[in-house]
Image (cartoon, rainbow over all chains, first blue to last red; front, top):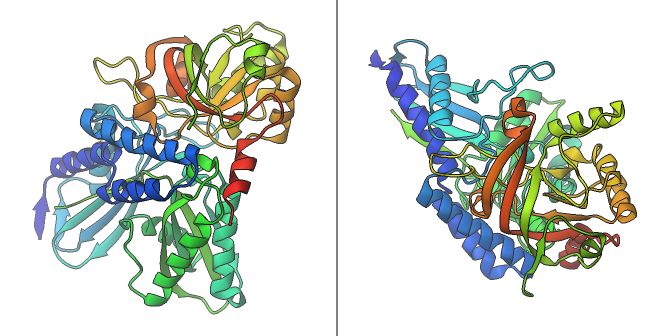
Length: 279
Length: 184
């Protein structure tokens, strides 16, 4: 059994929170530059240019890309031959607290959804844990903004709806979201599993880098088709009209019950924040 | 793109009526921050017939909850939040003379109608360009509801703050027009 120090986890998570908020991924920078070349709307070009300039400032000055520094969503892959001294979930929360405080990140978490007030340190984190073989710990911090999260949805469809039903639901969701999630967006789609698991799949889909297709050619084609259809909606950067509505669409699937066909859409903003470390 | 139009706050009816959807605008002067939590408190005061912590006549409200300022900075990144959450409260503020709003995303029919009636304009700022936008904010003062943290009402001194007219006082809606133009 490999032993890992509590503070190793705290420091790693703190750093991931800061880096995810300060540094726009190279994959996103590249796709924004391509979009700027192709964009037909003058307003759209202006917006895309601002997003690129913004990323440069955030990176140089180590300040957040967006004032909404997100809910700290953490994907934890815990090697079964590893043990963290103390409790790993509490180490992750201490890391979030440290990262958001020392990194000058906005704290956006309310302690109780109805009666609460701001917890003041952006905890608790949402932690999705998977136990995996081996003695490594893989931690991904994916800070999630509220504006785009609010434009997400789970739908319990009928098996008869099939892939065409999925496509129509995704397009309809993006159409209704319009300007709210700060387009250009990244769209995560979950298909299958159960009511709660399909939402997790859609969230997990958002961890992919731009351009990384589903390994199954069938779903890879659906991803490409949906991206083209979404960009033909005309919503454009910030919803003010244009060619660039989404930067990518990612689909994750899972076996389903014979009676069920759950589908989820998790919308992300252009920042598509996620940073990973393996310890 | 046409040269941006420079405007100074507070805004008169005439200033507002000259603005058309799609205009690129640079705002200089004082503007005020408020998100939905602060709006709710303002509405509670109006309903009780009490005076507000700020005079809204001719002013612009910016829907934003800034990130904390690093040492040596006047403010942290400060991009717009979704305006729709303020929609239920907005018509009452427009009736008190509010002339402009800065945010992101579409407004409700009620807000658009109240904007036409009271002559007001809605500006879109670029969501997610918070670090860039913060460079146009020169001074910050909390004027109410400090307990709301990032959601407190702040007075911002801005210089050439970049926005686009999304809804004008004549019923124009760039969200509708823009999307129609580029839909395939």
